[in-house]
Each structure stands twice: as structure tokens, then as C-alpha cells.
Length: 106
Ligand code: HEM
Image (cartoon, rainbow, N blue to C red):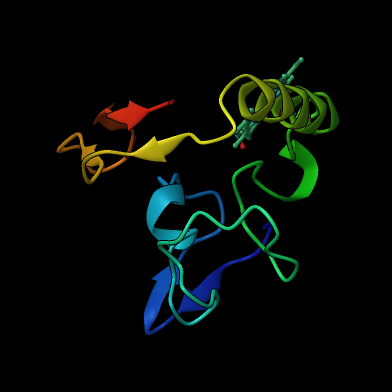
């Protein structure tokens, strides 16, 4: 964005540095149905994981291919893969990764 912008009453001046919280944006209930559900078939999916605009991730097409291939390989090896405990997130504001993921494969 090259101009000053107002978002929900807050003016962000032209040239200001901002930090985006991607995790919270991708879980916005105003944008996504069942935002906390991993739904690989989700069609209306305006996520911003690869950013937007002129710095949009140049590796996004490769990342999509890699993810599809790895998911296919995982599900082929472990077709009955399922969670054995609720996922626990790291207590981090920006990088919302998991502490671990407990699963059963057979
Ligand atoms: C799931 C995997 C990936 C995610 C979530 C991701 C995410 C992102 C995001 C959010 C940005 C924007 C950063 C910013 O605005 O400052 C970005 C930029 C970029 N990504 Fe990725 N990325 C992924 C994979 C890749 C891969 C596989 C490559 C290269 C093979 C790559 C190369 C780049 C490059 C070169 C930029 C800078 C683009 C620019 O500034 O014009 N990314 N990525």
C-alpha cells in the first residue's frame, strides 16, 4: 500500500512499518467458515499465508506442489492417520506453530 490508510479507526501513515499477524488473519471467523478446522477441500479460501501485492511469495506455486505431494505421500503411507490428543500451540503471538502433534497411524 503506497498511501496512508485508515483501518477500523486507526490511521497507518504512508511509509509506516507494520507487523502482520498472519495466524490470526487466517483464522478470522468473519472470513472463513469453521476457521479453526483443517479443511483441505476448502474452496473459498482467501488466506494470506503467501502475503499479497508486489512481495507476494514467488515460491508459492512450488510450495503448493510440495505440500500436495507430501500430503499425498503421507496419506498413502498412513491412510488411517488420526489425532490422539488435541494439538497444543506454542505460546507465541506471531509464529503460531504447534508444540507437537500426537497421532496414531495404525
Ligand atoms: C509454505 C511455504 C511458504 C510460505 C508460507 C511462504 C510465505 C511467504 C510470505 C508470507 C512472503 C512475503 C514476505 C513479505 O511480504 O515480506 C514470502 C515471500 C517470498 N517467498 Fe515464500 N513462502 C513459502 C515458500 C517459498 C518457497 C518454496 C520459495 C522459493 C523456492 C519462496 C520464496 C520467496 C521469496 C523469494 C519471497 C520474496 C518475494 C518478494 O519480496 O518479492 N517461498 N513467502
